[in-house]
Length: 301
Image (tube, rainbow, N blue to C red; front, top):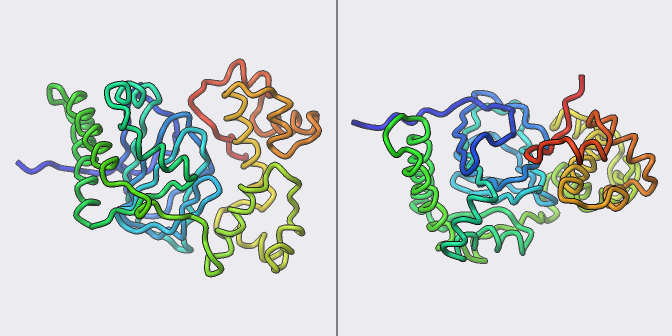
């Protein structure tokens, strides 16, 4: 009997429920609202289809093709940018806890080879050398999804087995040749360049006027792009970039004044006010009470 592999609609919750692995196979008829976010766990994203302009990971921006894989380490911020009037969007999103990866690395030190290689190069996209390889990797993800949605005996073991096979295949095929650079040339869309500029300079003073001058465009052009493509203002994007980075640094144990300076707030009192306004608690309260499983700014009312 043929397996039924039915995708789900996007769920905006970005918290991992399982202690080890979790897979989301999502299909949306229209582009969902995916906020700028980061995780304390690993994310492996396989793109199937959709009207994406690009996908931003850290300071890199990628144009995805079917079968492309994003390897996103913990605390690295990311989000998709959709084309205007985008429609169907289909992808697999595999989450791995730090404990799960450590356990399989203890058995074989090469099991995190692909993730280490991407992180060392600060490049996060892998393009499969052949369509057959991309299909093989997708088949492993389909097996994980099928097992996790079913009620068969040993389904957890089967899902873990398929996940390990997925990682083995990925590690065996990755090389410098199929790690794709996310540093675009002069033909890159302006929004991608603007997003990269913000990610590379959020620790320094950033103004709309200065950014526009850097790219030889008007401030209104910059503001229109952010409003049209991301649904938020230029300054809103800068604030989110700084505050999400601050959350991950705080939960990593970095001293609060160091966090403040690292996120573009030389004056700690300004950082304290901005963080409290955006997150709802002070930096010290966030360190004490926030669950270490979610980096995101609450949506605006």
